[in-house]
Amino acid sequence: MLHTENSQKPHDRMAEYLTEEMAAVNRLIRERMASEHAPRIPEVTAHLVDAGGKRLRPMLTLAAARLCGYDGPFHINLAATVEFIHTATLLHDDVVDESGQRRGRPTANLLWDNKSSVLVGDYLFSRSFQLMVETGSLRVLDILSNASATIAEGEVLQLTASQDLATTEAIYLQVVRGKTAALFSAATEVGGVIAGAPEAHVRALYAYGDALGIAFQIVDDLLDFQGDSGATGKNLGDDFRERKLTLPLIKAVARADTEERAFWQRTIEKGQQTDADLATAQALLRKHGALTDTAAAARAWAAKARTALDPLPSHPIKAMLSDLADYVVERLN
Picture 1 (spheres, rainbow, N blue to C red):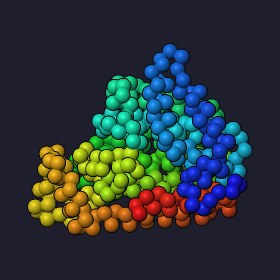
Picture 2 (picture 1 turned 135 degrees about the vertical axis):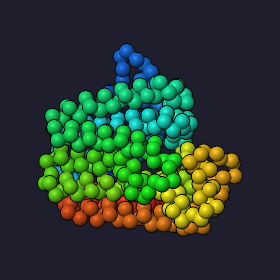
Picture 3 (picture 1 turned 30 degrees about the vertical axis):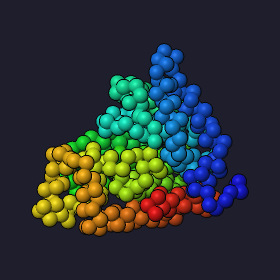
């Protein structure tokens, strides 16, 4: 293993450990996002792919395969597949959310248009299926195609649950498992499957990815109310303005008195918002302990992710995955 400083972030240490494989994944992504007939496709995908994302999901696939002793070529295909699915969902999400900023840069739908974003997202989904098929593993195809369906289902569920004050924490968890955790768990699970790992190890990798993805999304939702937009690449309060009923809001709504409930009905259900409403919402979240309780929930899921790794063999990557679970919630500090 390369000698690294302990002060390095876990995903940076992992990227360093997997340097050659990540380079191969990036080459494959560039090769497969090309289009002979439609130059807009590589323009749009390059804008998002080059935006400096951490490539966390494909890295999880490579890490899981290496942890399970895989020495074949197909974890590269699967890592690229996972990144293509992720990028496709981002392109579609930004259209649905009418977002203007992603990773601190203008979104593709803002720079080009909604049609380009949707169609290029479709192209990347199709490319991801081509990459999966090349592995020759029906089980891998089953896992990743199920994940793609689950992601879409989670997004549709969010459409209906988002602005409904009756939305419960259980429904929120279902949305998060769909739109975020499904790809994390598929990314880790297919790494174990392609390596031919024992079933107990494949299950452990799935459970790790699931819990990590949930912790990751809860932290994201919390940072929308208390984050630093310079660090997150999102504007503070975007979810509130888009009337997304995330975990901090669900907790505050559950504890609201009549007057506060009327505020949530006006701002979230009816979408009648003024510039001062975000500050009021933040004050209500603090008043009811919704922010601290949401942070505790994120930390509990991160702890579940670490525990899920227990059945897996000792390996430098195992320690990095454990540190990664801690790091996801350290963003709250």
